[in-house]
Length: 157
Image (cartoon, rainbow, N blue to C red; front, side, top):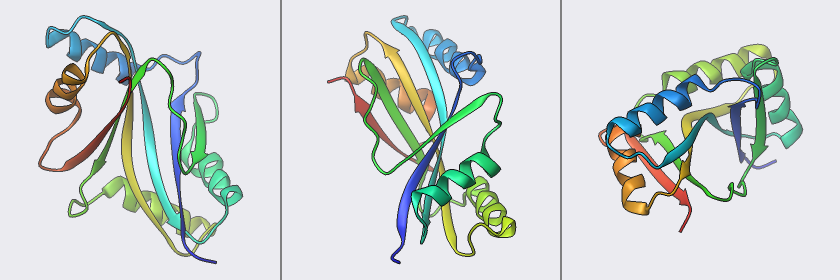
């Protein structure tokens, strides 16, 4: 079997307050951008391995989520939410990813897989009547450090 990659997206369930998302929203408002209605933040795990989706779901359920407060998706490419801007942020290749390394070690030591690569990132969902320039400003001033992060903007056109 050839190596495949999957993304595990871990998010707060609907009835759980997204503290980090609200902190980002407050920081955006401090920039003078008052049109943001909501911000949600998910943790991303890019998994590269020789396994099927069922194994990746097991990793998410058994190792990565808090079953009470978190939900998750496993996908290769996900259809995005309408009316939301999406900003995905990952560490650049040359930057050490300690969370990814810890996740990799945990997966291997659990016995689920013996060979796996893990990279981590964040996914920001931003809802509001914003234009591309405002999302760029939010990304560059709040969400990323250009020395260590790559980022991708998706969503509203």
